[in-house]
Image (cartoon, rainbow, N blue to C red; front, side):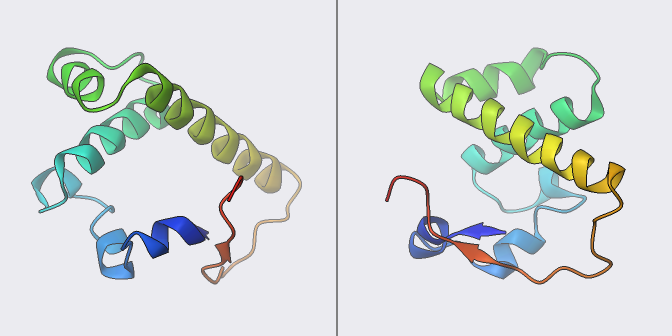
Length: 103
């Protein structure tokens, strides 16, 4: 899924492809790497961000942005788990572009 505003602001599929394994060594910008470090810590359930990952996350995003990232990640993760539990996940899923909420 892609929000329309992300695509309008330049999100391209080749950038999305760099998010997979090895993103730390990729040429993604520091904001993306900080957000991905947070997402990995959340999804791995290894506990809160620590050390340089935490410092980078707090430096790159203000309190409102960190909250938005956390809530968004929790919602997407929760909905994906519900789909799996209900046996509704598709074998193949096309990329869908949605209007950005509030725009």
